[in-house]
Image 1 (cartoon, rainbow, N blue to C red):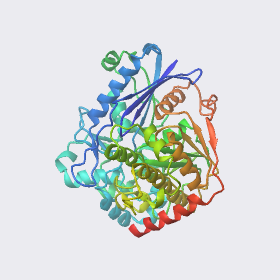
Image 2: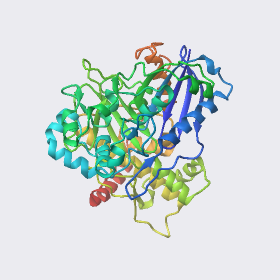
Image 3: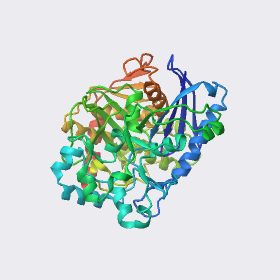
Image 4: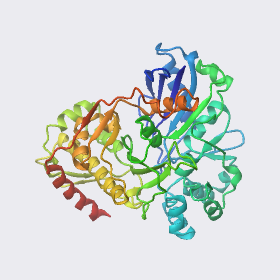
Length: 490
């Protein structure tokens, strides 16, 4: 049996097809080739069209099927990974009522802060494991307050992956993992949070049916199957947010295991068996893909909004047309510390690890006679690595102290310069794998359809290499200087 994985990212959609017997990836494609735009009608806003997502998913599947590397009719299950925390609203016909308010949108910060105080800070942290902050529940409350005519038409709310699942199967459902990332889930009572629904005035009726992450989430509709050259009735057997899915793809499922990702945003994601939370909600805790009522598996997530997006922005503004390989080659010739240039890699919305402050991106201490384009690119990658270290120290304060971090060789982790800065700034070895989120989604589909289980799904997963930190203090000295600059902005 072949397994199809869909990874709905902020920048693009990726599709992978793997052989369930060997877990070998037969094909991986991306669509579109250029990054999907983020719509920002006002400062701090960030939206995307669910219908554009759906069109991109279809085109990506068609592109993969046309590769000739496999027979599309051999695909037997579909899995979906998706950008977390987005809000999608549909009417009774399944039409999107407005653009999705996506993960890096900051408009609902104050709404979430008020809810945090009104419900009770300790109750929120103890039951929800998070402040409502800037998550999906607060975004829905923003729509209710500011677009009542839209809110009145809502049939169901969903996360981005639920929307793609609906388009494929015609069915609407969600999971505890998805609801927890929206801060709708009460972990202590194992139910939709009565406190959140009562405070915001949300009806239970607008929430989809709740299923397990690995479950029957519907079957491929005949009309969609015909359009995509697939068999009618293929089961959708897995849906998860991109960071839990990235962890799954790296076999990070047990307490103490940790994954990292450096895409549009940067993430360190560790697994705990405790209902853990940060008192300031600077890191966040959600139900992992293998969470059950009986066996608590909590994903503890550090998110930095402005990582890969800053690297891409800098390239597009300062070196349009250059490849990342060319940029990295030049930057690697600059010595550690970027000749005194310091960059704070924010500017993509309110940063949770900075207590939901939106401080923007900052370039500090530019010397017009000393600093060139290569220096700027090195300072960008060092600044991103230092942001990871700052967040990792918060995780350490909360008991998450990784001795090893697993990462896929993709996005920021495809840069040797960044890997060096990350490992030495954080002081933790990195085990690097060849993986994609879409491969994780395909593996999830295989687990969901019971082709294999979480114990044997990764029998063929082999690390490309291990990168150890060196014993030099150079990065530590530069980090402390960078940290002083950050603190002055908070």
